[in-house]
Amino acid sequence: MRAPSAEIAVISGRGKTGTAVVSALADLGVGARALGRAERADPGTDLRGCRAVYLMAPNMAPDEPDLVREVLAAARSAGVTRVVYHSVAAPYAPLMPHHVNKAVAEDLVRRSGTDWTILQPCAYVQNVIPGLQGEDPGIDVAYDLDAPFGLVDVADVAQAAATVLTRAEHIGATYELGGPDLVGMRDVAAIAQEVLSRPVRARRIGAWAWAAGAGAGLDPREQEWLLAMFAYYDRYGLPARPRTLSGLLGRPPRDVREVLARELDPGPGHHRE
Ligand SMILES: NC(=O)c1ccc[n+]([C@@H]2O[C@H](COP(=O)([O-])OP(=O)(O)OC[C@H]3O[C@@H](n4cnc5c(N)ncnc54)[C@H](OP(=O)(O)O)[C@@H]3O)[C@@H](O)[C@H]2O)c1
Image (cartoon, rainbow, N blue to C red; front, side, top):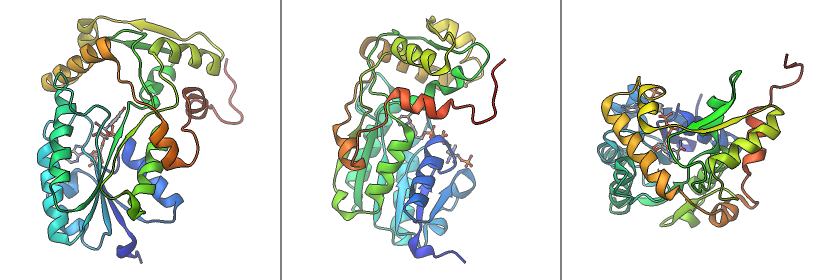
């Protein structure tokens, strides 16, 4: 039988970040309730008995402020007073609609009357993994290969999330979470090449080539938002620094090499042809 009072509800809990947060909470011995699409209709019922909510929208959600409003209302009616909101580094970047949605949502969280904390993670190292797993590993991006990013390990972000969810001293704080180094995609490909011991391509592709290729299956709104993000990344990257995350973890965050080595480890018994 589960012990509901010990549980933390993780909204969008079965995606890339949500599964990492659930697992980081399990490492602390804290139970988590992952909520997804099916539970959105009645989050009030699903939040009942939870001691906190990890509030996160799915990637590129068209309606993030609405989702955040819904969950805050449901938390209120379920008597849940502790909320940690998963935002992004540089939320108020008006050239990127999905960032601005998070800036709006941050304001809703701060004015919600809950005991809130806000996390602002940079882009994850894990975003490059799918391109590195095939027979022809590479990083193909529609922006400057040398634009600076504070790429962060999603497992480190999740560990920080579990820490702030379980300790009252973080109530009222907003934390930007960056990895240890500022890196461009050219650097990341060079590190991946060393980790994989095989050539790894770093290639800048045109925005319209991306739209006709990797982005072709997306709905027009998502395509437009991603193109806006690439245009922003091209000029400004997404820098973020590690000091706050180090403080939360009690150690330096993992660097790109450590994360790629862990994520791309073929495991014992694997032989590359
Ligand atoms: N990727 C990055 O580098 C990065 C960096 C910083 C911040 N972030 C932010 O991190 C957050 C999580 O990203 P992610 O890629 O981990 O998420 P994700 O994989 O897109 O999330 C999937 C989860 O969202 C649920 N979901 C999908 N559509 C939904 C809907 N319409 N209503 C309610 N729930 C819905 C899914 O439900 P089911 O369980 O029913 O499938 C699933 O549990 C996003 O807000 C993103 O902006 C990402």
